[in-house]
Image (tube, rainbow, N blue to C red; front, side, top):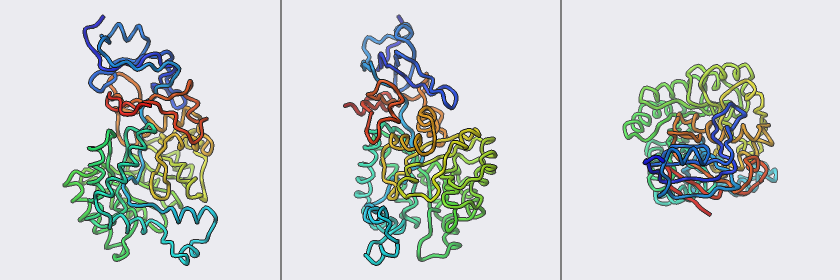
Length: 411
């Protein structure tokens, strides 16, 4: 027996999903044991292999008999920090009420309503609301989350949102990666040209100087930013060390996905209107396409698409919640439900897109799979087979969540 002691051992897992195979292969190990030391996976295999390599005499033991062990979900697209909700708007729209009628009823709608509320809310209330959402995400197996700004649209309020996101990473077990999305819309008191100049010459330098974001994002769509404007903003971000991402082709095709391929961005998100020839181009790059079926469902999207073509063409794909006031879900399991039924993902493809794909969409190589040397971000599902994750609708199959080798959720 080795003299190297480990801290944690997960024993007798019916299935351990290493996520190490190809697109539709989860690299399943049956009757698996997993050893963890100092927050890192040191071994995964049979009981004999783990016992032969490590001293488990003082390790915390978790019996996963009859259960599934998987990597923590990596949610690569959220608008986590916002104030309040738009529940009245949602409740009215699901009945087909015309937006003009909502105005007559005194219901203020759209992102600008959230911008107004978020700007005016005290930091403490913003933090507490976002923290509650994050801890629910953790209960549903999400261990790493991306958080975008974009509900401020002024330098001061965009920085406020990013600072709160940083605090969330410090005050909760989850890892939080920040994305600056000042180009999420336009303030009402500036022209588009004036606002772009503010983004480039004021917001981006100050965000970068404070080290508040890893990525820079922009919404490239009709009525928002053109491909050329998006390129201008993202190149400014690159000069300040912010990696490029883009919202593209959500409601129109105006060249955002082409730009993603041209600039070899970290990710291109939404893609409802992306032409097949652009998918072919993206398949030849390292860009990850982040897809959000829960948003299509929540807004009754006029063009929810079948991502089967994208997968078949070899585009690298991630699934994300798009948690925001227009798509209020904290459950990646619900996203997997929808991806399998609405997007024609196989269960294997959906799980892989929600773990490894999400990590890739955040430029992270240390998580999203179960393997030696990877961070011990692990979830245990109280089901006998991984296929139940798509079959159990609207429920939470997560029993245990482990973050950095420590048990943070147990039921």
